[in-house]
Length: 133
Ligand SMILES: CC[C@@H](C(=O)O)C(=O)SCCNC(=O)CCNC(=O)[C@H](O)C(C)(C)COP(=O)(O)OP(=O)(O)OC[C@H]1O[C@@H](n2cnc3c(N)ncnc32)[C@H](O)[C@@H]1OP(=O)(O)O
Ligand SMILES: [Co+2]
Image 1 (tube, rainbow, N blue to C red):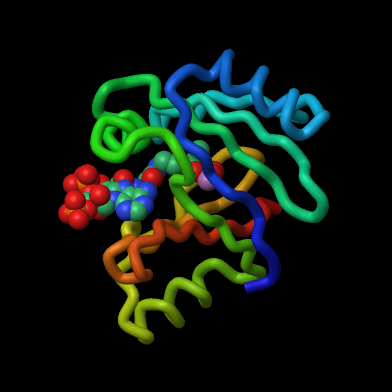
Image 2 (cartoon, helix red, strand yellow):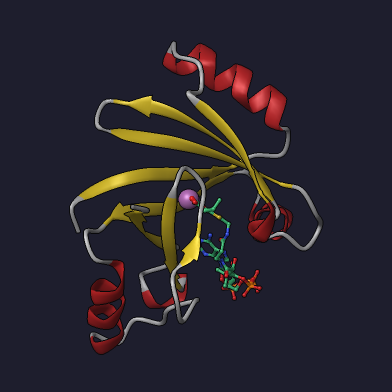
């Protein structure tokens, strides 16, 4: 693992949350992106060497909508940057972690991503990210 790439925060109202994080961090999001495969709107704020990712579900069965329904708004996942996502997935599987996807999928902000089930990581949803070349 190279770096904490981003922290994902589940929000109910994308417009209001973006305005609030602009006030909190003093910077505009450098990017907003709709990711259809995850049914989410995302925005990214740079903070030091890492990023805050705001996530709003766009359908009731989106992982973000279901999370908010059950647990309310808040920190949803921590994403770690890796250099070789396939190698890291193999390593984590061999260490007994439960991966939520068998192959890397396309995430936001030009990344390949894979998720680790929170039940196998002390209640924290972990995302692996690798820059797409
Ligand atoms: C935009 C792309 C990408 C990026 O590039 O950055 C993203 O960040 S996308 C983010 C949204 N996508 C995902 O989260 C995909 C991976 N997530 C999943 O596959 C599911 O959400 C899940 C983690 C498997 C949970 O789904 P499911 O089992 O259907 O929901 P339950 O509500 O039944 O949850 C089971 C169990 O797990 C607890 N849980 C759920 N989400 C989280 C979480 N984010 N952090 C911690 N714990 C979580 C949930 O509370 C349940 O626990 P119990 O109630 O104790 O059983
Ligand atoms: Co993320």
